[in-house]
Length: 155
Image (cartoon, rainbow, N blue to C red; front, side):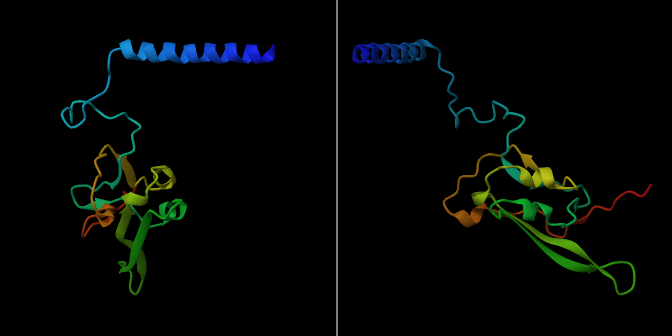
């Protein structure tokens, strides 16, 4: 008796799957033709496309080179290279950002770096076109040449 019941249940499940397939055949298509319709639709708000570091008009950024984003990155996508720069006081130096290297090819877009950044120096952009023929082109320097740390306003 259970053998016949299992055959009937199997046929019923097959018919359910065929019914769903037939419904999808008659529904209108919603596929976007990507290269032809480029720029006509806006990406969703929570989309993670590419990591960027914003600079103001004076070529200043907010990254203090603390290294928290580098430590929290699960697969070493971020590499922070620092240098020592002299302060206004005699003989004293402080750590400053030299290069902020980001390997887009090994990034998993987990957003741990942006969440853990205490300065909110890095964010996700909507740029999603990253196709290249060689992987070294996916390694980018996020800070601009000659950029400096943005001075905090004194209250």
